[in-house]
Image (cartoon, rainbow, N blue to C red):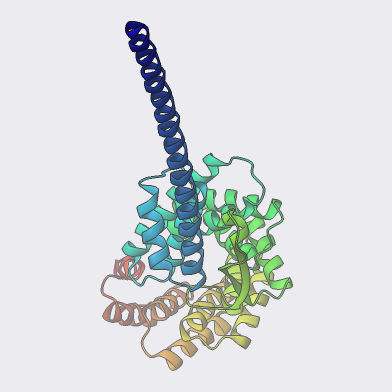
Length: 346
């Protein structure tokens, strides 16, 4: 009897240990599951908070902080669409604010890298026209050798229904850079006919996980680096000149002189107008344009050079050489003046 009692106690203890092991295992599993849920929720909330923080910083116009934070977080999540778009947009804003061109190019390269990568993440997603818009302008600022890409993305933005008012202006400049002057004139004329007197600025629109819903544009008055109407008229005239349509070019140049208050723009306008008048055989009117430049701006190498060229065409080598020497005194490295003077002295 005593032995049976001992065996019974042993069985009870064994079952008790088994139950304890099961309860312990279940408890450990439950704790692990709860911990995982907590970690997931913490990560999710943290990610949401980070996104909200970036949007808030962007909304304050703190583009440097937005750029630095998004760039830092891209090291952990290099294919995060939200971070790539914010990084690209903030890089563009910083690029156009730079004074030194080399600094501008650093930010432009970052902008292009981020936005091209964002397009790879969500190829064909709705709203991409805004990315195309910024990419088109970024490629324009990258230089004339990238003008074809500027045209490609700006046209894609326009086809996508994006209506930033400065798209036709940038398209006109980009088309001119690739020597497609007919499309350049068409784009510039569209900008002019629409009365484009404002650029576009990227601004936060709403709280959303989609950066293309967070970022919209608003029309603003022109800031430094944008294209006001006098330069628009001058650009149209240059494209018409390249097409040998001098009457149309002359009309736009006259309009430009009527409205422009910028001395550099007025000089460029008079130089081109004088050149057109000279080609038309109206030497006295051309001479008047060059002399007006000298009266309003003092010695100006290109004005002296074009006077010298005008006098040389009329057969007055004495006056021509005098003007060419004046051009070289102002700018000793003026190549066309050196070439023409050498030819006249032979």
